[in-house]
Length: 336
Ligand code: FAQ
Image (cartoon, rainbow, N blue to C red):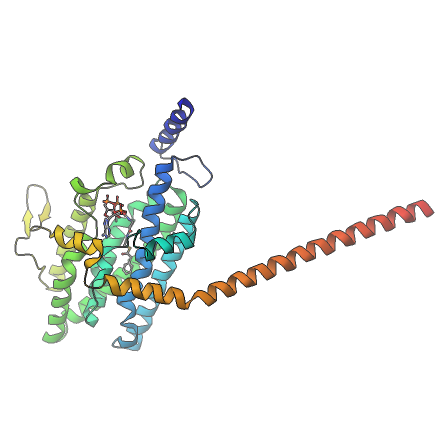
């Protein structure tokens, strides 16, 4: 008991001292569990996030837009892979994490349960969703767990490109024909509030924040990051000449921040609980594609087994050859 307390105190001292925790270091069980929960949910979000954008790859308005979108969607898959690998360093297997997603025990970001109805949605996702993702993820580069923090460095660089491609689409539409501008406004109307909700429940309803902040997994609270996003996105909307769909939005001179109207937390809770516009479709697609890809995983495992067996045979052959050579030398020595 005293020994466990001592380990825990030393662990917290390392965190307070801004030291990185690495996979083989001692860590409290709850720290490990929190990280597996957050990192695997983050990975699931990246992979499920490929679905709304993926539907537009074949319908992008030009070859250039299509290649950019294709590359962005591939990046999201890559982010999922770095993140699953980071979670694996904590002892979670990929199979367990995917089973938790399919069994609805693990969540993924609420935002990906909304449909991408028009091409302008691809602009709005890049602009708003990627902005929100970056604002949340930049502090995660300084997360106390080394493999997660390092994965975030590359992810943030790529997200920044994603954000710019989204804003570029919005600029083209907002400065295009009146119909194009109306499409951009409609996309902003539908993506604004879900993007504001992406940061998670308000601080007083956030169950994990206090502990995650003490462990320096999270560096800022959900509301702090949300505010940063709002302040930035409202100014960007002004540059686009678009209107944020919030009649109560106002600039608060005293605090130097924008204040929004009431956020619909009932809608957020409904979507997180599985009852958003696309929850069922997203999970069904993931399950089906995972099932369709079973043969690839089986082939990879069979190939790895074959390689390992070949390597073992080679090692045995070399060992035998070494022994034979040794006994030849010994008997030649005796003859001389
Ligand atoms: N949706 O106590 P807290 C992206 C859950 S990546 C669904 O505040 P925490 C890239 C939360 O899990 C986007 N559930 O939790 C991209 C917890 O439930 P649990 C994803 C949510 O962990 C762009 C409960 O509510 N990013 O966009 C949500 O301290 C474009 C209580 O909440 C990350 O995952 C939500 N929005 O803070 C891809 C970043 N919010 O687990 C494609 C890493 C909260 O006990 C296209 N994650 N919940 O069952 C984090 O920073 C944190 O986990 C938070 C939540 C901030 C998301």
